[in-house]
Length: 365
Image 1 (cartoon, one colour):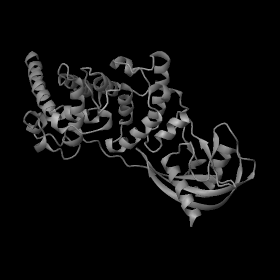
Image 2 (cartoon, helix red, strand yellow; image 1 turned 180 degrees about the vertical axis):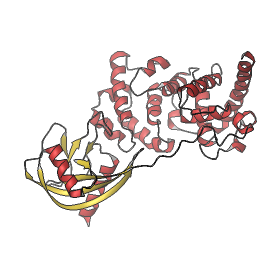
Image 3 (tube, one colour; image 1 turned 45 degrees about the vertical axis):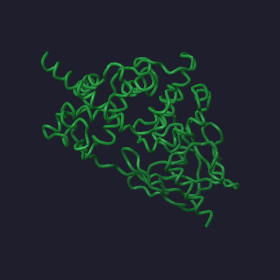
């Protein structure tokens, strides 16, 4: 066991040197890498959770124009924060970012904590994100294990098995920690991320371009395409969702706020519901309006349908122009009106935003 540990340490040391040498010329330019401001780095790392760099870039710039520091973010109403996040998806990240800002202003002098342990205690921050913030913002010599790092480390050391199982994950954390040279935590974290993003790809890794190919155990054993193992693809369900479009004389559209602890929590959307098996779209909408609004409505016509894909399922959102015949639409308490031009400060899920755009295009014809 001692010899094996020493071998791992020697191999990790060689890999670290070669990796950092490669990174000096191959580092990807990103706005959040040009700063050492911990707040800005924290925002970028939360945005990058489950989201590609090219998608994040414009949101990052706009978000920081709106909230240039911790205090401005903490003081902002959640609706304003969600509006700035609109379209980026995974909205729990925005809610957690806002909550964490409030905690840091109240308890930490509006400063981002420096240690992994303190960072992990904040809403929305797991071990890898905490390590990335600590390493990139403060130069801490700590490992990371985001999706790119997980794949890179598994292949370098030929760690077989499901990388998300606790046993395999513990091995990967240990190997990731060995790669961090003293005083090089920031560059190591960024280098591993970049190698996984541009060379050690999930499918068809570019082994010939890899600076570590001569010491990569998976490549030497011909396992680079099977480590980490591919997850079996699950059938993606599809749901028909019906939405009621109530429009005032001034063109404003009636919306309801989604529950904060559910999918798309805190966003504003048309009153809607899923169609049950055997229901017509119209029957599903009438049922949904009775359950959610306690009103009876006349369904006038379908104004359009939009398709949208979420991470685990797809929907077709069918919008129907409606008017009430029994009872008034509720006011206040999680209801509101989107101005006729579709702007304002209410953040909508992308499918509902697409439906708004479709309605406006129809009006312009």
